[in-house]
Structures are given as C-alpha cells and as structure tokens.
Length: 151
Image (cartoon, rainbow, N blue to C red):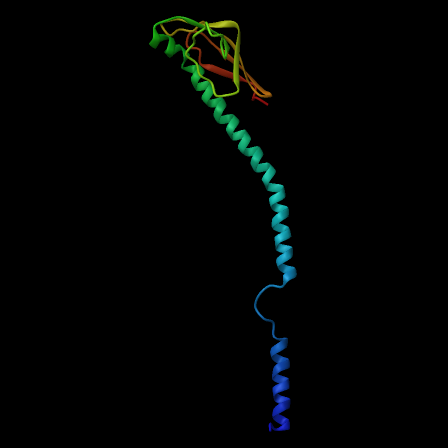
C-alpha cells in the first residue's frame, strides 16, 4: 500500500502535468483559419477569372493583328490582287485570312491588296463578342494600328 505522502505527490504531479499546455491547435483556431482561407478565396477567384479572360482577349487580339499585317505578303506570295470587305467572307470571295473563332472583320470601303504586296489602306472594324477595335491601315505597307482597347 502506497504511503499517504506518496499519494499526495502523485496527485500534485498529475495536476501540474494537466496544466502544462500541450502542443497543437484547438478546434476553434483551425475553424478560424479555414474561414479566413475561404474568405480570401472568395475574393480572389472572381478576379483570377477576369484576369484569364483579359489575357485570352489580348492574346487573340495580337494574333489577329499579326494575321492582318501578313495580308500584303500573302497577296505577293500568291501573285494576285484581292480586297478585304468582310470576314467571314462570302463563298465567292477568296481571301487568305483566317481569324480565330468568333472574330469578325469589316472594312468600309474595302481594303485592296495588290499582287506586288502593296495595300491601298483603309479602316477595318474588328469585333469579338461585345468588344470591338478600329484598325487603321496606312498605305503602302498597311501595318495595323489599333484604336480603342476593345472594351
């Protein structure tokens, strides 16, 4: 049988051990952190989708501008004249232009490309969904100069 003084020491050591903080997090602390992460994600995710849409738009716009800039060379390479009125064009019109899905182009008056690669200039209206850009084409090289940011 244990000694009465020994029993008191055991009880005191149990009390001291139970009052020493144990490593780890409480359930409340974990729930607060999860709630904060949820709030930050709720704020950030819509912005990320907006950024993705803007980057996709800018990438396609740059691709369209590059393709339009190459039309003079296409006329030279094919050795024929053509004029750009609208894209997608009527079946009878054959122009060497391929734009990404959903893009339309309309020139008024039509932009003429000669077989020697020279362009006579004009204004081209590009549209993609709700966005539109006016592109000025200056003769003779017709490098596209965009006006408007497509908003």
